[in-house]
Length: 310
Ligand SMILES: [Zn+2]
Image (cartoon, rainbow, N blue to C red; front, side, top):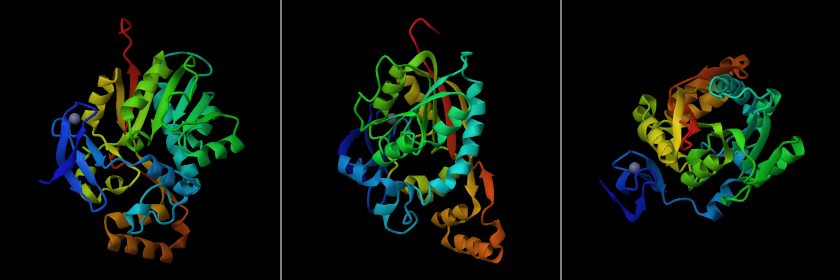
């Protein structure tokens, strides 16, 4: 076992992190010996965050190249739009079973709203949508494309009117990217109505597939991923931040076949080459999509614990 050089504290159980779970040449992944939460070491600096979250984040052709410094974002995010929105429809069906109020227009804040694809689906289903996003290119894109209330934020606390409360706040593929997830949960707590619902989608590092893939698990290698939760420690982390769990579901993803075959190279380059050769022989399946649920992602619905309102 190697040791990390600087003491870091687990935000979940306040223990000192000293186990190095993965020692990549570019960074270490530390693991809390108490709760198992894994955290990238060192954390990304503000300068690095600014250089990662640009327009290129959504169109990063180098994602699967060997250079780690370029391992972030998406190859063609807009090409994934239709498939992502199919998955969001599944999410909204589940959400409806958790939201108690009978309002016609439920207010929803998408925290880390990217290019607005989730907000677009929500708006079509009568939600009043708002978004906040770190990537300034994305904020400008949404403002040009839609009429949604979207704000840029850079980690401060003043990006939303404190008097504005939401029925739903979503963190979709977001919490693993944050340098201070506890601060984001505090914002969600303050920003939710008393019966409001927080929905978080993130990786489950305790899932059998993530454990078998181990250091080959794509999510562990991405430079933009900082926090790696398991089902158990995310539940603890939410409880610590005054949220109780309503529901936890494994949540799959609809893949474009060609994109999926490219991603396989993280696990096996040979297998990826065979699959891509197969595509050359049968080019008509290139545009097809496939829903896969390997259990590596969990969707958690939680509500805030308000004193006296259990
Ligand atoms: Zn811990």
